[in-house]
Length: 603
Image 1 (tube, helix red, strand yellow):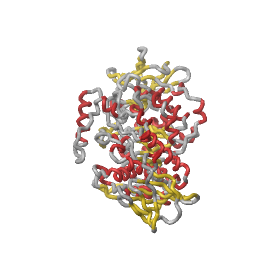
Image 2 (tube, helix red, strand yellow):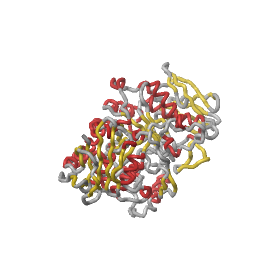
Image 3 (tube, rainbow, N blue to C red):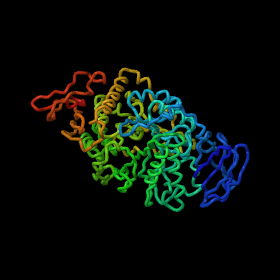
Image 4 (cartoon, rainbow, N blue to C red):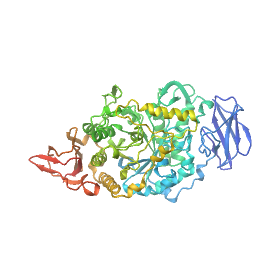
């Protein structure tokens, strides 16, 4: 087991895997030093009197003082000493004992970045807004990485202290308060974790042992050693970390960043091992625990069960739906958007789940993906029209509300909420936030800071449609521009956006045809560059017709047989429309107003 184990008698057993060090001493902040005793296979251990709040560090080869690789608390940053954190001392409310995790399959996810969700950028400040998310219809709050990284500001994907909670956010005790508050509001917590690489500053793991390997390469540098010599303790480091978020902080699910970069040729992939361990822990705790993968491979085996050779992830992010909707309402075709045809691919995403399912992708210059079997529910796919990547990895971090006409954005929202996928909103989307979410860092090392700024400019030099200046990630104002403008939520426009999301999420919950996840029961009636008509059915409930016209003039499609009652349209005044647009049927043709989408219900 990596890291310290605190005993009830006031002592702690410090455990460390450090085969690369000749000698290791434990140094406590009270000035005491203890020689670590060798165990088997590079493990070292010592037990001494120490408890919650005790500062400590390891001295390698009598010359280098380093924090614990499995430290849960780094109050002075990733270069400073570690501090013992005892999860048993955490103060959970009485409501935690009655907590029942909502099913992701019937849910709606809200992704947030703690550092920009509020001006304060802390867990405690974020707690004030959780009740509003629950009232909106959100069931799961997905938090971008909170593991410790160097500097105060950043997205969190440059973490180096995987077990510690970033101190400027509120540290481990602040995260406990946040999770507890989410559960009191009926919100499950999904934590974004990064196991495919370490950040560039403060990663001391190579000094302890072969945590990294040069056998492979990733865009972020050294590859985590998952299948080479001495990889067993490294795999344990990953899996123990994941389970620790479930047990110590009581999160309900993990979102696993870029799992396609977890290079592992072992007979049992580390994700399959993690899935088994998570399933066992869920049975032990008596509550569901879920794993959501991010992958760009469109490989069905990611979410298929172990029995058929899959990795048993519970769900995965599905970018194909996002790309199709984005292209449909913006017309952009740069970069990865070249892989999508717009509305025709929206229909494909509804029916097939993966659009790139053995199809050539121009941006990658190769064929991508494989077909998703019909027995895999749409509930296993998380879709969106915006997320941190799709906004923040644009040169200016611009949101969809600044790229497309508001009427088209409303159409995209409806098409997302009506999809078989689990919908995800990015923070601020519920009231039509227009402030950007830009890529920002705060590396204190001048050379690293300069390299990051230069690399960001180079990244967008190949985009023919982009000619502007790229915001400097190191400039503090880049982060400041990305903080939500909550005053916008109180305007009539902001309230109209919120009503649209609230009513669509309610419709999704209350109409079985919209929430059954059954892709095989989706019928495509029309799917052109500007019009879409789909029927979603349920064996035991009325069907729902989904129509959209993205053109600037009326469009006609063949009327779908049957009687249809309007449930909701994006043209309603309460949602920001002009209220004059309605669907009419004449001579077997359904006439759909311009820049308009609607849900209709069968008797």
